[in-house]
Each structure stands twice: as C-alpha cells, then as structure tokens.
Length: 289
Image (cartoon, rainbow, N blue to C red; front, side, top):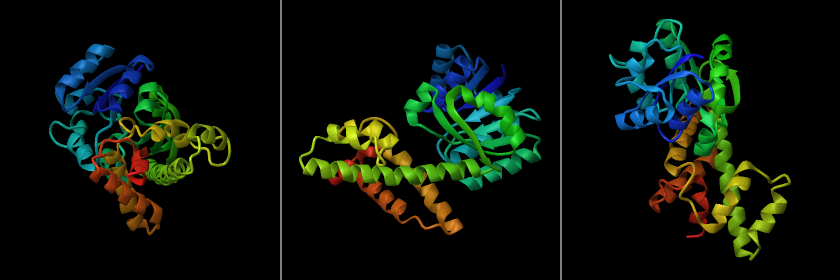
C-alpha cells in the first residue's frame, strides 16, 4: 500500500482515483477545483480530500493528476499551493492529462531539479475504460521510476507501457488519436454509404468486423451511430483539443498529417452543429445532415 494523491476528479479522474483506493488498496487523498466533488469522492470511497493540491500531495509517495490542458497542469503544479510545494523528496508525479510533449519535458526537468520523479502517462479508453479500470496507459520517463510506479498505475489499467524518455507517453497518445481520427471518419463514411445503399448495418458490421476492417470503433460505436445517438462517450471538444496538440507537434517535427487536419475541420463543423459534447462518432451526423 502506498500513500497516493490524485489531483483532478473529472469524468476520467474520479473513477481512476476510486480504483487506486478500492483495487489498489492505497491511502488516497484527492483534490478538485470544485470542493464538493472531492468531498463526494471521499464519502463514496473512504479516502481523504484536501483544500489545495499542496496539501493533497504532502507526504504522498505518488501524486497523480488528470486535468484539462497544459495551462491547467501548470496551474496545479506550480505556486505556493501547487503540487511541487507539497511533494516530498523522492516522490513521483504521474501526469495522466493528455497534454503536449513539450510540457512533459518541462515538468520532468523541473521535477528533477527539486528532487522529484516524473512520468507523463496519458490514457486511452475513454470514460468507460476509466470506470471499468481498463485504460491503456502510455508512459514516458526513466525506467526505474516507471518500474516503481507501474504496480500502482495498474489499479486503473489493462495495459501500461514505457514508451521512452519524458514526453514519449504524450507522443504515443498523439499517435493514438491520429489513428482514431482516421478510423472514425472511415467508419462514418462506410455507415453512411451502407444506409444510402439500403443495407442492414447490423448484418454488415457482423461480417466485416471479423475481417481486416474490424476495429474497436466499429465494435463499440456502430450501433449508436446507426441509430443517430451521440450523447455519450469521448466529447468532440476533447478530441479537437487532442488533435490540436497533434497538429502543433507535427509542425514542430515536420510530420505531414493531411487526414488528421481534415478530420479536425470536420469536427469543427460538428461543433457548429451544436455537437461540442457529442461523442467523436458524430462525424456520421455531419455526413447525414
């Protein structure tokens, strides 16, 4: 059992922190901008809650955070009430936020200067994966630090891997999102085509999902897409944030992402339709409008 802090109790962080308490049997203290949510979590899981990130991180062996973006991360890490102000020497900061690789390297350097360890550890699997403790976690950092943290991370994961030095976890998550963007657009076009052709989408997917066209998106999203239901899952606005990170990094490293850039534009059109909070599979709604 380790002493653990968790910063940020959104749709992902809330259940992830819960798994650290229930499955990992760790001593968990949480912090959230909305204090009532931290109090609710503590009442539900039997852990503690703190008034500031600094107090939550105090004496913790591992400090997890899962917040919105680069600026949100910096706001909870630095400052008099930030995570770094409360961490003890030798403790490990694990960032589950999907953020930039540049930020990960920045935090790794800052942590090292203060005597802390750092792992960037963005996740894939969405809200359902977080709730079921079945996330894929892509890590960047030192091998020894990763080895020590892995058994703790596994409380909310089905797969945890070290991709390389600091920033590698975030770069891997970018590759993940690039793949998903193309897959969802292709699936949307396929279903739209099948609907126009008068085919039974359920029967078709039952066959093609077992072949080379099969994917997690096809297996888990084709039914709701065919029904035109998008009020669930990974929000379009979150995907646009992630794709923005991918496109910015591509400008930095010279990679060409023509399909990713196009799909990002399509998601902008979905947002204009009022679909900011719709699932990413709502690309089909754009084709069927």
